[in-house]
Length: 330
Ligand SMILES: NC(=O)c1ccc[n+]([C@@H]2O[C@H](COP(=O)([O-])OP(=O)(O)OC[C@H]3O[C@@H](n4cnc5c(N)ncnc54)[C@H](O)[C@@H]3O)[C@@H](O)[C@H]2O)c1
Image (cartoon, rainbow, N blue to C red; front, side, top):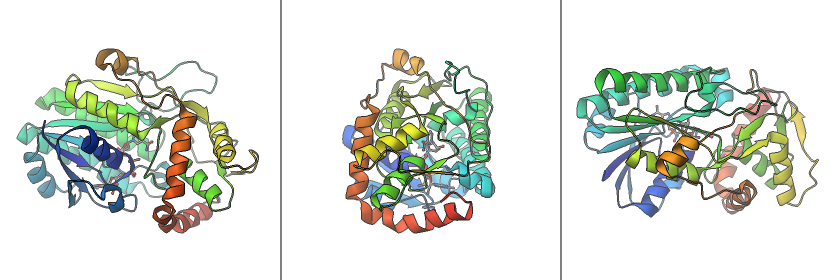
């Protein structure tokens, strides 16, 4: 696999994956990205990458591009739960119709496809439940975002079985790291504090997320693309379970502020309680392990990155907080 097409490669995780490919492989990389509000050209600066600005739901663009590559890694998506509650339409168009377009192109040209998905397709776990998600957990999505991702996963499985498309799926836990939009939980809290404000925590802050650094997500995807079994699903996680309040307190501590300088705000409707990934299959079958085993160290690196890139995140911060304010969450 020499020629790789990365959809959504100007977004948070997609751009981290492009950096990973650039640093660790000699692949030729093309990015297909619509450059929505979540994208960032700067994230690709200095890399030897061709950027094609286009829509994954546009068959004309997709068919031609897919036919000129050996493999597609499909990150492009509308990705923010809160936005899916206020306007679900783009989530259906990109996450479901876009995946359908890519599958049809992969089928026509017999091109290998890896589909990036989320653990949110499984719904949530009780806070006290020791269980974790596995590849056998039934789908039970809660929000328009996770339902659209679940729909796209089902399409991929059906295209493998019905048409023999050479595809794999990964469902990853919550990512953090460089280039993540300030609407998302960790960058929002870091940039609030860097701007002299206070973190804003939904509900009571008891919701648990299983954090993984985007660089570890990238290395896992690369392993699956090279050595994963066609038709298989792999869960990606780094044993990083923390409740939201613990994460906020750690951010405040690392930035030299008192750990109780946060505000509780209106909870997200239908807010999932807990996610947790059992990544045994990926680790035993493909020998993958995360490089960022220590969440607090990964968080420190990420805080340092946001401190060094204020001119990048400043441009999005005001509009993002204004949107939170209209929902009573600022
Ligand atoms: N962020 C997480 O914690 C997380 C966890 C697990 C899985 N995922 C999955 O990883 C993928 C990437 O997530 P992210 O957090 O980097 O998202 P993001 O919102 O930061 O980036 C998405 C990218 O897709 C592009 N895009 C959106 N619609 C498009 C379209 N119609 N055509 C072409 N490009 C389009 C955007 O411009 C943007 O560059 C998604 O599929 C998401 O479901 C995310």
